[in-house]
Length: 429
Ligand SMILES: Nc1nc2c(ncn2[C@@H]2O[C@H](COP(=O)(O)OP(=O)(O)OP(=O)(O)O)[C@@H](O)[C@H]2O)c(=O)[nH]1
Ligand SMILES: [Mg+2]
Image (cartoon, rainbow, N blue to C red; front, side):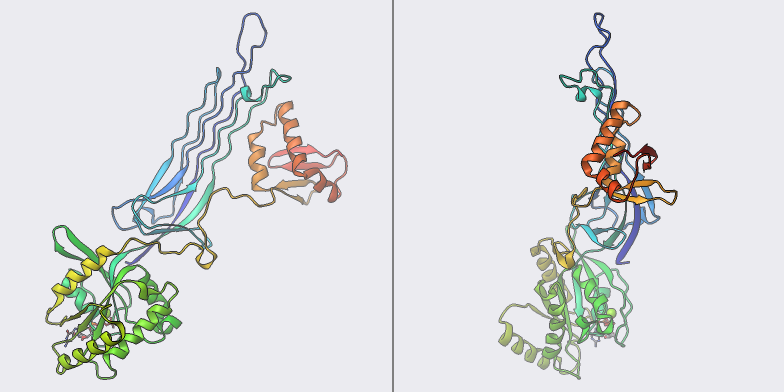
């Protein structure tokens, strides 16, 4: 399988709550406040690591939760951090949200993506002491951890891909140089799904070669499943362009140009990838002359830009030098990102982006007002509203956001009920 997909639910850890406590001193009833801060909740990361080239570990929509931070304690004791979790995925894994927007492309070993951020720990009461407020009885609750769902998509990276017209002999080549057993037949579009094979030149020299479906004129316009097939080529770092030199219908150089046109019309300009040429079916009658003619035209137009190999995949002739050259070509290519930043308006995600209106007020059916909004609820949860001071703090916070003005605008009258989450208070102008 070339593409592997999985869905995953992630919950980062909640921050620990801040603590309210006071130093005990003999002479004074209350010493200074000494409630410690809560620890940060654990975050969840994805990290690209070489290993099994599959997402099977995540195949069954799994849930992952990072540990919560511990609450703060007396004597300024900080709560312990919830430890972070690193989920390992194979290099080449693309992370998207559930709408399909690309969030990150973990193209190479060690690439890291913060998937869900652990909640900040709440401040203990020591942090709220001022010269006039010496015995604060308030502490923050820890922030909740981010909760998200993602799709993981692994598009396997091949080092090199075999491209060319249908029936050029691409699958035959792969079958001869690797253990892969692609289907081979004398009708076009025999190959509909890419197949990968590993080519071992020596103990320490190997690369992954992809057999790809054939391309035809108009592929970049979607013809003959063109979009699908061209997308597979995205995943190949370099290309072997296979040409059937025995073909009667068309001059070999014309068909070479046809395929190149399709490659360059595709959005990532696949023609920029390094490429070698394999003239296949050299065992056929008249092949030698046609090959000479092809090379003449090639040099006239491109000089020595492309290396040309004459092979007979059927007889296994000329495959060794072709594989050796391909290996060298693979070595010369730097790893690249599969998505150009900003492509299709996609952008790399940074957690907790601002810019949104922090709240919204809606009128419930029973006539009470409800305050909504991720940001405002997050802050609400940080405030211990069951103390008087906490309550004052909450109300002044809501006021500072403009909640009161909004309630007024919506026609709220003195004594009307206002709710935020499970907390209810009365509106007074
Ligand atoms: N005479 C000769 N025939 C070959 C050679 N290589 C492949 N063929 C034949 O060409 C036909 C097509 O070969 P495939 O390997 O299936 O071609 P393909 O490029 O994978 O074709 P699609 O998957 O349809 O794109 C088969 O009948 C092969 O036996 C060769 O070197 N010489
Ligand atoms: Mg094939």
